Image (cartoon, rainbow, N blue to C red; front, side, top):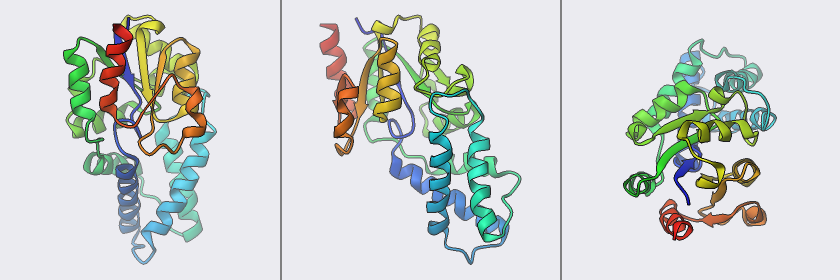
Length: 235
């Protein structure tokens, strides 16, 4: 019997396209503050993304360090190449741009609301700093929809380490076999959840991760498909 449904955040509730727009505007604001609007913001965004992704991949399953520090270091690496300084309030810029430009998947809110009406505990388990996730959820108008929010900052580790998932289960008061976890990363989300006994669901809207589908119990192209999955599991 499934009693709780947990979600990842970036790429699961909010779109990667919206995240790209957000990060492009972060770079634009940094260049504006630095007086370097002569530089191509898209080119620098691509370099920033590459630096950030490389740093973040190294953290998978490892003890938590602040994402604000990871992202700031990535921006500083790019800035050094072009001879400008990163503003001291870079993280404030980042949070503000996430508040402005974050974009939910079209069926995210109604799916969450439907799950709550069906009586499920609905939570988030995400690799995130607490200030970032709460500010972002508030700006999206969905903060109050979640019964619990568990971050890597809370857990002290990054997914797929078991601790973020275990802490979320403890907070919800459910057993692993009573919980379903939805994410967009087969290696971190599906494997991490399955390793502790949760049912895993991969969101793969364009079917680009087909070679890793075997890591997951279910694969969906839309969040709304979760409703049929939980009904079927509870029949």
